[in-house]
Length: 395
Image (tube, rainbow, N blue to C red):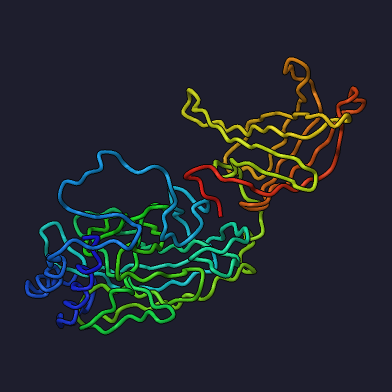
């Protein structure tokens, strides 16, 4: 049911006229239910082909006994470092929202209608100035969410429940097409967790609970590629005769409307990298570790190794580590220098702040009267990312 061809056929089937609906949970005729569900049963006669470089997608036994190694989704719609599971369950302003009736069923399979609220909003993501497919102008970018909320009285009710609609987007040269001939490139993928490649929410699947989805691109031939930080129109089509699809006009992402758009980036595994200050000839290795505690909580640690020179021009290493809580945007570390035999001696402190994926600031405060030839230096030093950890692409 993840196949866009199947969804295209489902959309085409929606031109069948259903009876007018006066109120929620009005029973639909057997013919109307059959017309709605028939679309989902239309299976393609061939396996959907992948885009070049995406690898084969076959239904028969293949030749690869092991999964792939970590890597970023080549068709991603936002920086992988922007968010992790779970997605937010509360929207932030600005939002675009409206009501729409969705096709619904009861426990016996009777076709019904249930009104829901559809809300679209964004959260700002780090923009490190690197051009990407979803951000070709290297501008600030965001992650776009769609939440479908059942009314409070219906939340979690399995005796009757709405089913997932068909979702399309129109942007640039990609239009919706017509009811009888929809544009397959307009279909978008909605996933309930981020950083997925093919995870999808099938048309007509049950929706027992209010759920947040992230807008994604399909990785298949014939699919459209959308830049969801730019303006687009999102269409929610419940496939009910007499019900006009809901079109939501989503404007360009404007960072000025988001107080967090210029905030420091929280420290997590995406900060683990090799950093450099070429002017000072300093190399910095940052590691992010975590350890599960007996009570189930997680302790995270930032460890670093800084290569610089002492007063004699010889290599001098500053090292240190400190625990920090999730979402921390600065970490202060008691710092040591390595002496003969790699013994550690107190040097001072270093405060780490991550401006974005590619820019790290460290403020140094050395102890007074450091022994010769240990060099003390104070103040803010900027470092640029040199390499990223495999599978932890920060953008």
